[in-house]
Image (cartoon, rainbow, N blue to C red):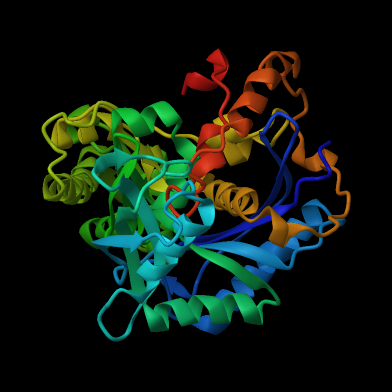
Length: 457
């Protein structure tokens, strides 16, 4: 157990569920899950907190469940995900002229350049959530991924700035504070999910991460190691459930159950002669529902979501097979049958399901490897990026908390496979690259092991 590392907690406030996961990196750079709790979410619609009281209740329930899984935990600070229609992004350019040109460029100067971007003009009522440097320039040299150590007079960069509605942000912060917690940072959900499900090679090849949640579908596009685009699409799993409810005349709970158990994103794949029997209400006769009709409804809405993805890729000129890594589907909605085929058909790109398991230490509970928890695990990785970046601010004593038996699998795999890579990981850690990629995106993605078993999905 690596007790020098801090325990970092991710809080995913979703439309359908609220999840709290506490984790700490072990000596191999993998996340050990120390506590996990979830609760149904009632006060959130389309990724935005509308009813603060209901949201506080749900956060407290999720926290209680987390403490029940590990009573030794002490949770004060959390990294919180943010999404919703109000999220917007813009590109800016920033430069600084250096005073001490005979010395090399330092991290402090880069931090200053990033900090200056927070003064960018944005519409009234909006607030900057994150400033993400893309490629840097030093004097006449272009496309520098990390300018630290270079010498020059003028340092500049292109920036991807993410903004959100002040009231929506205030509602999240208020819900977290009234639950007795402190928001360490707000992280855009598609970026959190991306850090959990993709590797360095994906980033270079170019990928679109599509996180299909309950209330929103979040998109993050990476190309040549750079975050090119982010977007929040206002349709997701709940819209499909509501379409089924309306189209087939059933209750919302029945619609959700049918979607999960019998749903398919391709109507051609659904059996024409298969029917689902739904019990009638209060003495009404039972209903027979065609599996084919169910698939037609799901396909219509899913195609619409994927059309939005294609539209956003066109916006940044990355459709037409430019993304060699294709589309990585994650989030609860990605578990629909035949969704990979539909995605490939609509976008024209290869698709696969992104699971957060390559960052998790062996012995974790099976449930957490589901795409549903990608965002929450990504929030912990984001916390570790901040920790690596600002180690000085974290210099406190962290209490020793062991992984409780309830959060371990009954037969953890052998650790030996990992130990061979220990040396390689240390080398990666010593590579002091640019300390921020999205925010400060570094080690959460680079600290991967290239284990064969981690690569099959």
